[in-house]
Image (cartoon, rainbow, N blue to C red):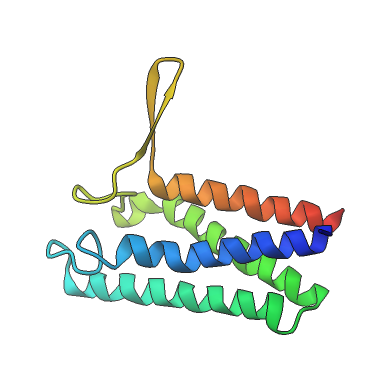
Length: 143
């Protein structure tokens, strides 16, 4: 398998993860139907998740519908945009009193490293994996 095809597969998997993952995580009682959330906040989370799903479908269209080097790089940038806005959202949480998780939200991943338990937020863990994979795709495209 050549490097470009491998990169396109990685980019596609990222797009699917970014389109489906938030639906799975947010279309339930922890977010979209959370009775503790104001109705307008629930509206925005559904809108955000559906918008990201649309971008993910567009990434797949760019990669496979009308493949070209330009479309592949556009797909790369759209995937990175999701990650960039994630980091921007985290870095501005104090401005809007945000948090990475809710009391009734998804539990963090726990890793036992040398007998010490380390917790990593599921959002940060997922975004980090997607960033590494997207960057691996870029390295393959440049090789």
